[in-house]
Length: 237
Length: 130
Figure 1: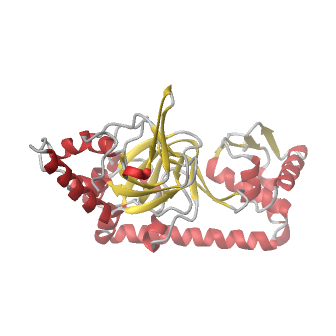
Figure 2: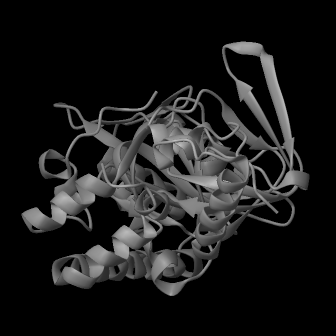
Figure 3: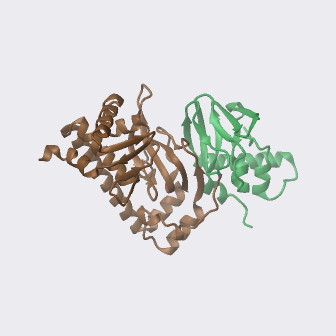
């Protein structure tokens, strides 16, 4: 089902992304040119290897970005949520999409095509600055991931992945516990932690047996976030 | 080659706002417009079972099928199944883009397919002013 087009001016998620703090005429241009669609779980926004044809901005919902190996195995690289934009880096570098974007939970995605995006970029220093900031944050995050892969044990990385999921998707309860309601598969959690399924499942079971987390189907409840944090910092002690 | 839209020309007539008097005019006008669009389009590749677009979505652009086979299907109507091959270089989705209606069907690659993507903004520039 498509959505009634809502102007960008009133979009509550815009403050989180590259379109934050744009001028009214710039927002009007986006509103005029964008197309909003509602995607169901597992539907794909764009495929790895294709040329980019615009920018996709998440108004609602959650997605995963993954790369598929020659053996057909998915490697989840990044999770995307409300307010985040996808595809602008490939557009700027004229590269093909390096990742596939798949919907994890029903989503509303706004699309701005290439010519409208570049027209906007030509007139908006704020947009350019926002994009630079976003890319810098992503580079920092990827540096952390690389360090994590080389310096931390699998156990620490699984704990760290749970905390990242909690930060991104979690809902904090008054008792300090955090519920993560995201339909990520165990395989996705394993690839995010840079390990194989068996190891991820082993450490998830260990954390559950220790009372740090609870697992119900695909839902994860973090009962003791401080304990997980302590595990991730054990090398630093 | 005059590329024919799978809608049978409905979109073109809506774009132009009127039916040219002679068919040859229609074909030559279609060809001119498609060629202009195709010059500005870009080639997208799809593997089998990958989706071009989904039923009930608004069109982001239109597609010229250059290579491979595409299947159209409706979720709530299993009897609706249509397969389109690249032989006649058909245009897919133009009618929905021009009318602003949402797709009545999903389009999925059956084989490896190559399509020229025609952006909505480029197509709308060709519409006559109201």
